[in-house]
Length: 105
Image (cartoon, rainbow, N blue to C red; front, side, top):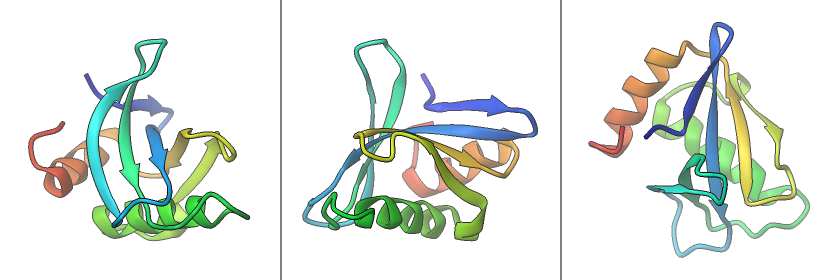
């Protein structure tokens, strides 16, 4: 069960945003009602004027040690369920997420 899908030479990361959290962190993998796996991402920023979206991109960038310019939200800007295009090969993203989260992937 992985929240990552190949998208051409890059990949899509499905996340479930939790704004207003106590601290910024990557969480567990959950399933939505359509059985799509999502990585829970907790950010302290509130969901107002794009602040939480910016915090999510910054957190993913920091945890994967990749530039923010390689990450963009392609759907879900105003929803908890988001799809992020990560402009790195799928296998590399999985490796980086394993390093960042331990054995989730």
